[in-house]
Image 1: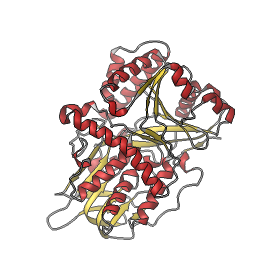
Image 2: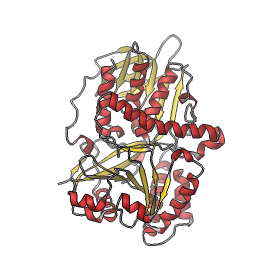
Image 3: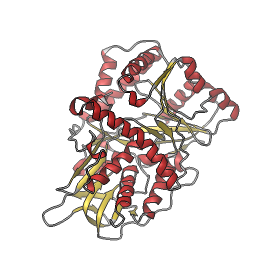
Image 4: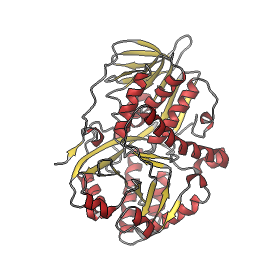
Amino acid sequence: MTTNGNVSFWYAADGLPAPRPALAGDLEVDVVIVGAGYTGLWSAYYLAKADPALRIAVLESRFAGFGASGRNGGWLANSITGGREGYLKSHGRALVGDFQRMLNDTIDEVIDVAAAEGIEAHIHKGGELLVARNQAQLGRLKAMAADQMAWPEDEAVRLSADETLARINVAGALGSIHIPHCARLDPGRLVRGLAGAVERLGVRIYENTLVTEIQPAAKGSNAYAVTERGTVRAGHVLRATEGFTANLASAHRDWLPMNSSMIVTTPLDEDIWEQLGWEGLETLEDFAHAYVYAQRTHDGRIAIGGRGVPYRYGSRTDMDGSTQPATIKALTGILHSMFPAASAARVDHAWSGVLGVPRDWRATVNYDRATGLGFAGGYVGTGVTATNLAGRTLADLVLGRDTAATAMPWVNRTVRRWEPEPLRWLAVKGMYGLYHRADAQEANGRMTTSPLARLANRISGR
């Protein structure tokens, strides 16, 4: 029987973590961080490392790693959210190249910190493999390969069909692009280990403490976060709520909470792995419009994800991770299509989570010294790596340090808010309707050079 929800598969082996104490009343600290996912925990980690005297409190509505940090696909990738080209006109080629190299290096930073802190997150740096499975996808692959020529920082290599199948036996593969700057990991283990690391540095994590309001500093008083258990005042209040940002009334339309779903198989027999290959443990993605992403897990399963019901009216957020049967069926069909040898494997677990999507599909790191308020997020599913760089950047901004990180193009941007309902619901529903229709046409041999595909790409920012 398939387990559905219960947060995610990444907690299945050890169970959900024992709860930490909740806030016990009003509190005053130097820094308060709202949200105990990757962004909040990395921010706390680097602040505490830089200045051990800082009093830092992290407020979490459920438990550390409850959100996207404990539910994602486990990709430590070098992606610049929304693409590099969007920053060229405003910031220039040299700085965007620096940004890309910084994200490349961030992968190794996460690996190094995990090793230093004794976090066993089953990290393996095998790179990212993007595979084309029909002629329309191959056309997008060729376009991406040509674009990559202008970005040697990626160190991307185009592979033939035979070279692709030698890495991973993906049915129907016509070619691929391999980017070495990516690692597979167990995201639940990483976030649990990181939470323990920040506590060892003296940071206090208060769980089951829902923040309902964040207010800036006023003349003669600090900024503060209001919870149902007390108010926490601090010189700096950092918001790290990602897909749950819409639950704050003041930020309801800042980022759209997009749903993503995953399934994972039971462990595959060794003879199946001999057929599939995948010995390099690359992360895997296809070139479909409504793309899927996958990894070979540490214990020999295939975990694969994609969009199910991408958005719920009114920016409502899923909490327990339950996934609709139609989404499980669709992902299972894609799994069997890509890996026929694994068709006999049972789907062991299915789950969903929400990620934050800004109106321009680009992540942001902001801090305003006058108000004492900062935030980071809007990673659109690319946050496992970006959260580390965001946390380091927030730490630099809070500490008033002028560094290479604080000069990056995602710092202190102004982003247009999403439209009110029903406009944003109609936009997302229409976008993914176009995606799925285009993918179905392409699977049947049609090239979607029509306004249908172009409109889908324009809406998504791809």
